[in-house]
Image 1 (cartoon, rainbow, N blue to C red):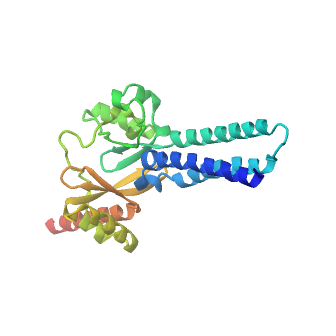
Image 2: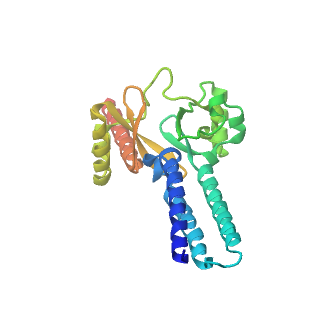
Image 3: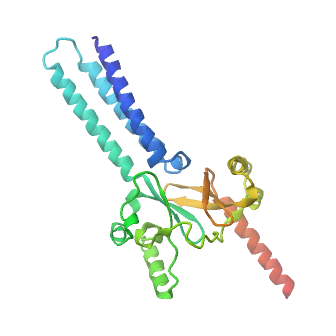
Length: 268
């Protein structure tokens, strides 16, 4: 076998292994709908580059039929490649999306390395460890007790926001299946969206039947933002929209304030 064939064979094996791992990563750890927002592209590109270049290139350089110590050299290359791949996978695993957390007026995408460990240790059994097979939808409502609510606000000001604390998590939608009060109807969202965002929103909403039953909420994370389509009647998540939702919500709030000011002016 020539060194080119040996390197090609090594590349084929590396590609097959990487393709299998990427299938799990892309459809479980980093679902396609959240892939862009989670900024997974650069991380996976580095992982693929190291795995597909490091091993085959070193094989191409050192391989020579009949060379003394060739087997040892190939074993060392394999160990280096596996170590690099394991380190990359560990990094991808630690930074994977773990929870989609519903709070008062939005959703938060929380990554595994952002979760507060002390809170996780006190959480319900199902929330003590970050999910293995994709992000879990939960709610983190503010406490009704005024003292507990104040404590939660103080914690948020120190950086320990409620969405990072699994001990505060509850099922979503909850037993009452209340709609999210801050959600904007699709009709209003389309009227306030830019041309590009409107086209994307229309395309994704059209996949899910009657748009009149859908509403929009923002999804925020430390790596970016997106939109979330929810059922108007119960707040259940329907789909994700790869747009910047904040101009829509800023315009919606400005319109509400203008109407309130106009109403106040009229009643005087």
